[in-house]
Image 1 (cartoon, rainbow, N blue to C red):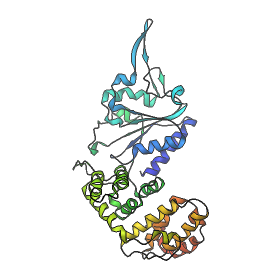
Image 2: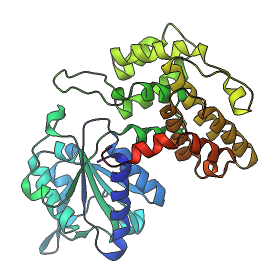
Image 3: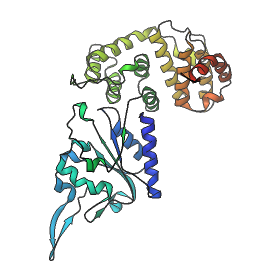
Length: 352
């Protein structure tokens, strides 16, 4: 399932707490695909705390607590890390990351916590959602087969990388537009992991964010940048990205396009992707109100000039996801939509 749909599931499960219908969710997926980030985004959106417990780092007694004598009985001291309404708040997210990396003895201690929302005398506050995540066994991570009793306490979703979802996230979080353009040009490199090769660095949504940081830090150091990019996403992808970035000095004047002045459309496909990504990024940074509407209008004019209409459709689609209804409100939108109507209708027709 693509990340945007998984996030919608998590949002629904968090809202279901108020109706008493919340079901614990287990997210599966390869390393670097963004499972943990999706859970963190839900907590951040609702402004609630997230308690991240790594069961792989615990002993069974760490979760169950330590016994102590109370008169003629033995009671259990509740671990401080478990959610508590007084310390953490009435609402939040209990996140059991890397859950299937925990040995069976620890997993067994979590059964009651996950299904019954309690562990001995301890109870998970009613306003707290329970989410978990882990790598699949074929991903060469440190994993155990999830015991059936534990697996049966979750609903299970597999997170799959999706370029459109990643691009929408990248524009929202200020990822370098050159990197977005490169992955639009080479979409197969968004995630390229072969467990049989056991690579130390490989392309994934997580490591492309590392590459963004490398471009920020080493962009002016032409001797170091190639190696830094390879260190983030692997040799092959790093070499390709470096060559792509080095070729961008032939791009047209982005300021001229945004301001409505004449600028050529590049003949090379890689430069067309680069121009499209740069224009979306410029629209995002253009502010609100009149300046943004003017920029969007000029970008729509330029989008209609691409030799391949599909390129313009991609540009405007990304633009709409990044800036919202400002695209539809621009006077130039109707003319652009009429120009590409045959492409859009063909894409939406049955059998496509």
